[in-house]
Image (tube, rainbow, N blue to C red; front, side, top):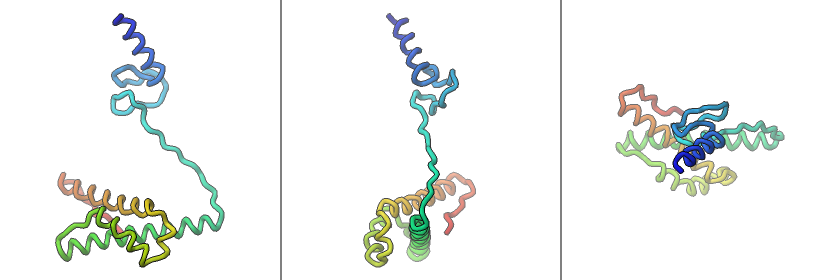
Length: 143
């Protein structure tokens, strides 16, 4: 019975995961992640061909996202310089409705996109402080 279960496990590993149960790859198939049987996630790239109007809209939204990133970075720098306090992602993302009230051009951009810009800024600061703590070359987030 145990031998049959081992053969079934080997067959499943070979058929579905292209490796043995220790995460080693035995065939010409996608790599496995971290020694587990879970396959790595794949990313896909799609080439788009926007019209001139769509391209203008995308450029405008990108410039607003860059502007928001730089404003968020400046807000964090000034808050630390003036009061020695850091601003979190949650505090900055709570200000997004007010930004949309003051600047109507931001209403055309989905809130998740704007939150993602602030999330990337927060990620850059977390990586900066992690590198400072570990003694690496820090690389402060740039405008």
